[in-house]
Image 1 (cartoon, rainbow, N blue to C red):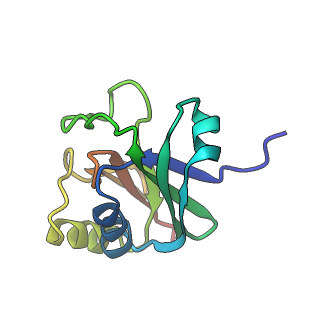
Image 2: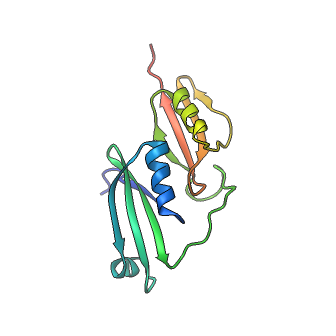
Length: 144
């Protein structure tokens, strides 16, 4: 029986750049950093696989980063949009939506569109992460 969502995982080309983005721009902390070979090769069904796995923690959840030394992955689509098939986004709850939005802009983060109050008291914006993955910031403002 499923009990909770644990993590979202993605493969990255440059692990140091990905760690820096999720640590310095988003504010996650590195909680795990390890190399895997034979067990991962068995798990994914690719002989000779070698991978570095890093968990970036936020509260009780993780963004799990994979950097395959072998086999190398294919480049991400720089123009991936929210409406494209597959994983649509990684969502982050924030406080101070406007301040967080401005912080991301100051760090050079590229947004898909404009921030929107999607329904009363709920503010949302989508942006591209380090591997062009779509991420979301969302704040739900309590009714006064």
